[in-house]
Image (tube, rainbow, N blue to C red; front, side):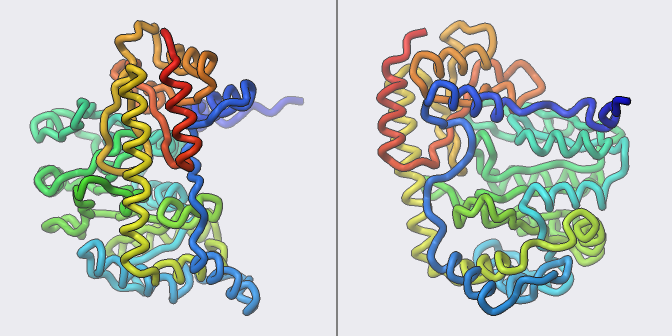
Length: 385
């Protein structure tokens, strides 16, 4: 007897990130495809988790997370994001930002509801939307600046649209939404009664003094925004799977009901490690930005020299490169050719688009040590299409 997979996964789109990682391993190459950072986790974070383990804090926690972490998040939101929230009723700790995103969609939207993604988008967002039986709707932001135009946004809405996803800083674009663009979103969301879901996992990785602005800090957006944040990128703990959702109390309560069902709770000692990390001095976050800006500059200069035109990111640790002039039929063909010739893995831009706009782009991750980046750009300089 065979058991077919459920219908609900029929439309899920396999990730080219996994494909390119396997191909990179096959050739023994340098993986600038998958978003795995090389920076070590801060001692403050590691020691906080170790102390919690040694203190016996290894059992279930409340589904919304331990109070010390929620209180630390509330203080951080006030200090860094201009958001005043109640630690006890507005914060839900989850299994990473992907977990918080999944719990939010399941709790607040119904099958058939439309949800607007701005492409280039993060692939997990699309697949989570599909898994929940929602209708993905798309708005294409145009490089190099990926600016949001109010008329284009309004034209992308349908009668079924119930929510809009804002990813700032964006993966893969590195775009930071400006105050003016967030004001556009506020006007449109107010007029059409839309939920705004804001993924801000890269909030501390920004460049050239361009500010990160949380949508919930703009005008009246807080009442209709779920802010999704986490620790994976800030503290280089992607394997800890710790993220959180911030919303008005009635929304947070609904999200927590689903969060409890899906995850029971986030890992107890790791929550205490994250709480310790939020006590880091401002110099830590300044140094983090400086380190990644240096890495961004290394990869972008190397891509430019190699003829892979970089779209300079404002934040996050990815860069899209324009390879349309190389003449490959697809972005995947270009990425595979570059890997075979240079041993450097990237991700096809088509992984982040429904439209054909991604076929002329590939994405590189530069969250690597400097020696690896210098070797990668040296190899890329030898590429001949």
